[in-house]
Length: 118
Image 1 (spheres, rainbow, N blue to C red):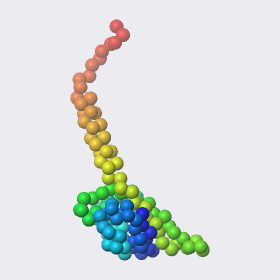
Image 2: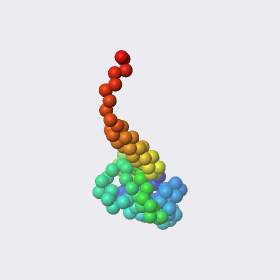
Image 3: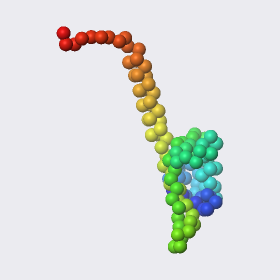
Image 4: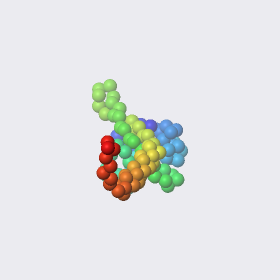
């Protein structure tokens, strides 16, 4: 989670985001989420995309933005909420691969016209 300025720069970051990206709090302040976004995902503006942590291994994240408003209702800052969904994406990919494998096996079976009722 990170409050960001109107220019999308991190004002503050929590420990979880620091661990997720592999940087210290001081290293992240004044950077933008876009500084860590996979180049192929940058233009998507999607709520799910890849980030590049310090270790160089991309992670998949879900990203939500909440506008922070002043007493008059004018937008002041934004709160970015980031959830690492890398493991979820890996499991989904594995399930798709297994489903494809079993479907190809079933499609390869010979068709039979067995009358089970006599």
